[in-house]
Length: 304
Ligand SMILES: *[C@@H]1O[C@H](CO)[C@@H](O)[C@H](O)[C@H]1NC(C)=O
Image (cartoon, rainbow, N blue to C red; front, side, top):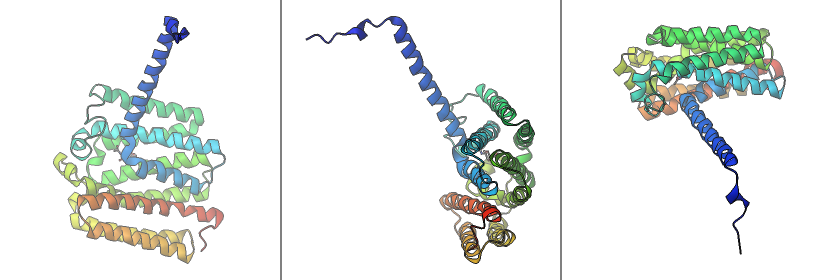
């Protein structure tokens, strides 16, 4: 028996091509993994809530617009997250040592290159889709710059303002791509901006240790007791207000308010690091539910 066949005589060139493709695949995998690490903590705070909000506010025109919306939101989230992490290396060493910069996966000299490459990527993506969207992207770039490079995010009010403005840009962009910016959409985006302004500190509770060391002033550090009470208050108050504003039915109102109360009480009574991490996850689920209510203005699905 002779199994020595042609592959042993394969010309050198095809081996080189196969080798090249294999290397290419592993390089792409490696970069995708880096991008995943940059964005990991914020799928629950940006990607899913924004996409769900856009779908609920301006029902998708087509599958391709939904797909575009997802890609657009993901790249813009990456842009913001890279910027944030390039500027917040010190506190990440304590709070998130596995991120690409503190772990050494991305070097000091590569960091600014990636930071501005993602900006270029987002600008060209928006201009390809619709020139109007470039304004939204540039606004988001300016807000991230003010928050990270100019240190606007280092005080309580600046941070809340920048976060709210960034969410407004995300929601505006995503809703424009998916559907239309009519009266309902614009109202929903404005309300969401105000909600974000009053609620963005919810993410700072689990990060208190790292933020204290780097001297970053957040609401939970500035007023440990008041910030917890405030969180309890706004999660109940917003649930009631939004249910009333969007005129959803009594059962929907009770569900949202019950959930909001649960989230608020969690923050108020359970104050360990582990509890705060879980509370923040629960908070984001509540926030997503609160952002679905505009759907009722289109379809009356929440009349029960
Ligand atoms: C990721 O980007 C979002 C949107 O600007 C921001 O709210 C969040 O804090 C960023 N997170 C990190 C870890 O960079």
